[in-house]
Image (cartoon, rainbow, N blue to C red):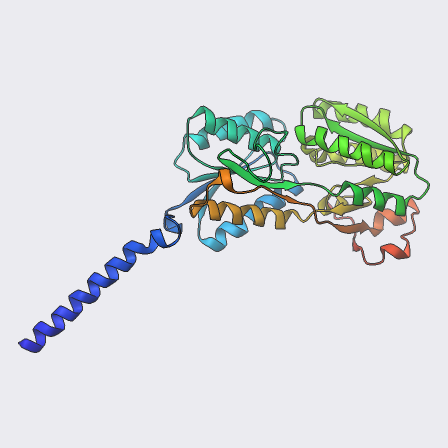
Length: 334
C-alpha cells in the first residue's frame, strides 16, 4: 500500500509538471498562439504569373509553419472592386493577419482594417513603393500596423541588359496604368536610368485594359523595344501588345521570368516565389508577437538575368558572350 501511494504521488507530480510546461508554451514564443489555432487571410490582387508566384511562396512559408489560411483572388476584369469587397470581409473576419499581394490589394486591406477599427496586422507582398502607397511611414520604421516586402525591380540592371542585347537602341517604350501607384513610382526611376544611358523613353499611360491595344498600336512604331514595369494591369494583358510587337519585330523586355517564358525577350528578374516566402516568414514572426509597426519593411532588389532563346532567334538577336551566364528559357505554350 505504501508503494502504491508513492507511485501515485510520483504520477500526479509528473502530470502537474507536464501541465505547467504545457501552459508555458505560448509565453515561450512571445505570447503567440499555437500555430494550429492561427488563421491568415491572403488577398491577391488578380491572377497573373508574378502574383501567383508570390502567393505560392507565402503558402510555402505558412505550410511549413503549420498555419492555416484562406486565399481570395480578384478577377482580371474587376480586381479593384473584388479586392475592396474581399478586404472588408477579411477585416471583419476571424483572422490573425492579412497578407496582401500587390499594391492595390495592400492598400485595400490596410484601409479595410482601419475602417473596421481592427487590430489585425497587414503584411504586404510585392508593393513597389510602400511609402508612396501610404502603407508605412518609412521602410525602417513603418509606424502603422502594417509592413512587408517591396519588389524593387532592378531597373538599372534592366537597362544594362537592353543595351547589351540592342547596343544601338535609341527609343524605348513603356506602357503603364495611370492609377497604379507602383507604376508611377517605377516610371520615374526608369526615366532617370534611360536618361543616364542615352536612351529616349517614350511612355504611354492607360486607364484600363480596354485601352491597351490602341495604346500599343500608337507606341510600337515609335520605339526600338518595349519594357515592362510591375504594372498589374499591363502584365495581366501582356498578350495584347506582345502579339503586336512580334508582328513589328520589336523586342519586349519583361519584368520577371514568367513574362520571358511567355514570349518576352529577356529580363533582369526578381524571384517572386522567394519574395513570397520572405513575406510569409515576416508574417509568422508578427503572429509570434513581433509588432508590425516596428518591423522594418524589406526591399528585395537582387535580380538574375534570363533570356528567351526562341525569341532571340526569331528577332535575329545574337546573345553576346558577356551574357553567357544568363539563365535561358524557351517560350512556354499557353
